[in-house]
Amino acid sequence: MKKICMFLLAINFLYANDIMTENYPPFNYKENGKLVGITSEIVDEIKKNINDTREIKLMPWARAYKSIQNKPNKILFSMTRTKQREFMFKWVGPVSDNSWVFYAKADSNIVINTLDDAKNPIYKIGTYYQGANELFLRDNDFDNLYSVPRDQLNVQKLIRGRINLWAAGETQGIYKAKQLGINPNEIKKIYKIKDTKLYIAFSRTTPNSIINQWQEELDKMKKDGRYQKIMNKYLK
Image (cartoon, rainbow, N blue to C red; front, top):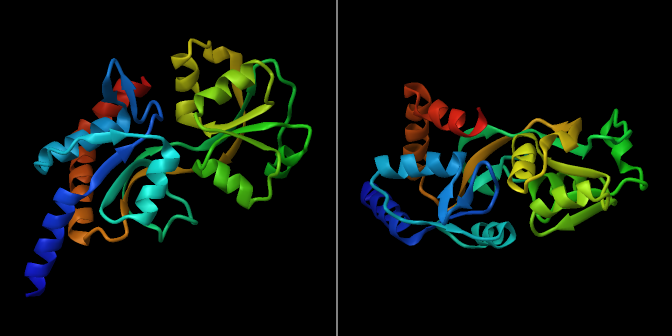
């Protein structure tokens, strides 16, 4: 009876859940009307190998993040796995490293030696609304954060001098600048905030059998070279 119940839970999950993501290059974003990116391709490869034909929904991060917290049977990627989030979701990954850093304009003379140095009120720090690094900085008593609904806006604000620092993932910061036609040499990393990794997050109600299935498929990709091929496509 227990096995039958677990099977029915898994079937219900497979057909009832949403797979959600946001615009977060180079991990997940739309290009020429198609969803692409490192994690998007990883998720597509896993779905293909477990015969999952559902489409991935692209939506604003704040809406997707609220949905996976409050509703069962949801998947959201790419999500930073943090201490605060550890028991809010179930996890498959990691899919990539993406340490948080402070970016400044290339000609900036700002020097940050410790995290507390960046709390100086003379600095305006651009952050992404409800993003993991914004939540981390707020938890560390930063009150000089200037939040925006789309992280690309922070690149433009930094170049125009409307903010002094931009808190962003190291991997995607340069990529976003390039997407906006901004020469990556116009910005520079001046301080590493925290080493972090990205994962695929699942609602806490997800059966462990599903988590194990996805994790096994990801592990296979890492062993047989498919994972590295995807990484090289976007990062080399």
